[in-house]
Image (tube, rainbow, N blue to C red):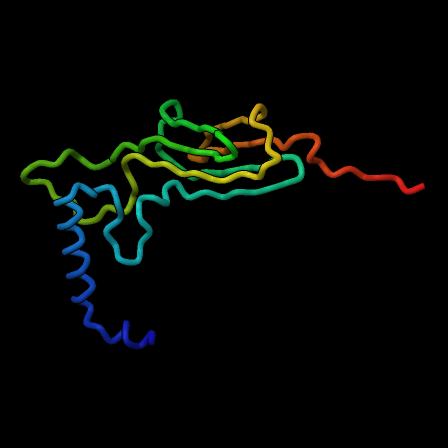
Length: 150
């Protein structure tokens, strides 16, 4: 099965990429990646989620965003990170062309479902060196308790 993909002429994929780029331009979907094997704009920023008995930690890797214009909300157990990343490209002009655009720019929104035992009153968020760290504490009642045996 994999050999079939390798035997396709390389021009085929570049033609597909060109057609997709034209459709993106036509319908205004310019913020998404144009590479066939790339992930779309909906996966920005990439995140890591870690759980411990005391808290849930979410790390969003988003260099170049304005932290003051980024919104972090927790509603009914769903943590949402939303904002916008400005484009680094020069404004379009008749003699300007962009040959590659792999760095995401535009509006983004990520949602993470959290466990039921998180405490929405104990949430903190920090942004440093391009990483947004959101720490959500768990309720004390949810902490494991050692029970002595008589």
